[in-house]
Image (tube, rainbow, N blue to C red; front, side, top):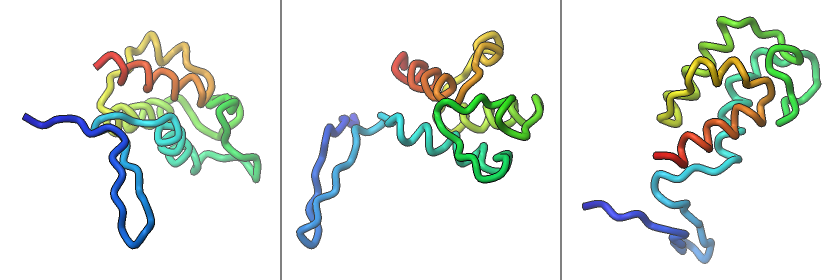
Length: 105
């Protein structure tokens, strides 16, 4: 049986590294992954933030949004129902949804 490790610190060359709980993800990881997938659709120099409205502030169509959502689902091993996807407007809302679904596992 595999047990979860919580806040494991490994020292290497006097530089501690903290490893998150096995299976747990951070909001930063989710935001980073979402921003990575949305980067090709960025308009100009305006950064992608949590407040970015996915279909308004980016040059992305509905098909590309669905592709991106499927990639996020695969990456974080979640399934976002279509009715929930329809209610997601911002990057923050997408990240919150992924985190909420992961917490239910």
